[in-house]
Image (cartoon, rainbow, N blue to C red):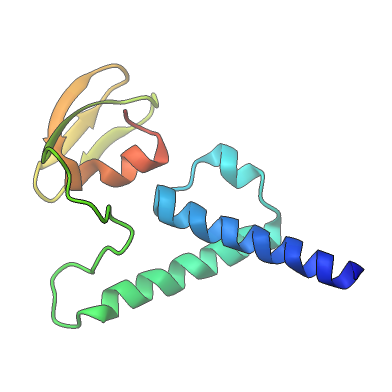
Length: 125
């Protein structure tokens, strides 16, 4: 009985780590990473590697890999106004919007696809 309970707990933890990857994307916030054990961090890294490898090889002759973690529903607006939350964001290269200089508290209008990963990570709002 104890073994079954332990295995159920470990399985739930691994499912939670996988859900975390699908919710926030590749950039997991530091506060959530600190809550993970070293072996769980290793599992997250291996899961990220496997998922990225699958997305890159799903459509072989495509310029960009298929992003399975993107929203399943169509967005209401293609452009968003964002504000940087973190102080040390610096410059970010994007595909459609060019180079973005993000400073804390500054509002910028950008394409949703360029900044979606940072929104999920909580670095911009």
